[in-house]
Length: 152
Picture (cartoon, rainbow, N blue to C red):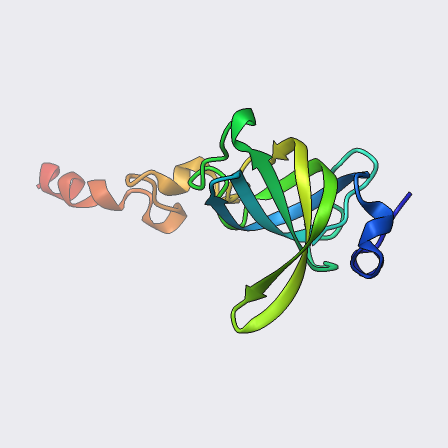
């Protein structure tokens, strides 16, 4: 069953205690007295838990990992990293985004998956990084003065 964030915010009592699978991009990770708290921008997921479209979002949510289950290090779970979590819906919590008040759906995390960092792809071949490589017209340039000196 797919539930929109708008529906969840309108009727929170109807979904309390239900398990949800959510995809998101981390906005902030905090360590609190309850445990680790991850604020994320929601991203739709497919049936395998992979993100569908990074540009579409229904809002933000908060995932809480209780202290007894461990901590989520804010350096590892940094802003911009992609996550998928399975969590039990707890409540709607009022918070702020900059100067605006916002109602966050809050989930108790049962499981969380942190996607690996995306590496930047460099399409140039390895030899472009070689300081001794010169393309065709300049291929023999470093040796030219030596070559001229030797034949005098």
